Image (cartoon, rainbow, N blue to C red; front, side, top):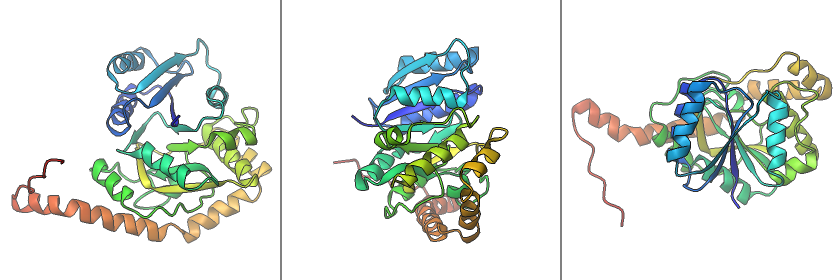
Length: 285
């Protein structure tokens, strides 16, 4: 069985609508998708979900708690229900590009040592593109950018930790590491970092899947006290993150993607500039 897509719902119905539309457009039909609502979605968001469930080509389920459990505890409950299956967790304001899930699953298939695979993102902190550590604008041509990503050589460089816009988590590694620590962390970002570090301690890797792109309106933040809890448990993590940001080991990959993207959009851009229509595409054989 393929990976399950887990989408914890938020309060922004417009962002949810945009995310679900992108899921339909960029995810293989029949993919299992779980919309998990920790009593967060209001009436408008619930109406968006109801309409989407009636029309999506994906195999989708929606659950809603009567009372909120808390972000980390709710996610841990959902992940445990998925047992040993691989799970792709999406942020509720994410916009996955075409082929995003196929590329993440290909990453897992190529290297059994990978515990988490994180795609590029315009607002993805260590994996932000085109400028690292910044909230870049949402890409204008996400389909073209996704194709440029798919054409990159899959090297899967290691990251300090996975990032919350989108991450594929290997089920067996998650089970070995013991799941999320809802007692120590109030937010998904810190809980994911902690989980990834525990999985790394068991021999797995947290990597960038440079062949996939998932956009996001803004980057995720940390719950109060979470950074202090991380620093206390993992004193080497903050210096490692600072070193990564300072030396930018993804610089060459980021420039490679920039060049591929520019080449991909150049014919269309030139056509627009001179009023020339792009050449007709050959029908598929």
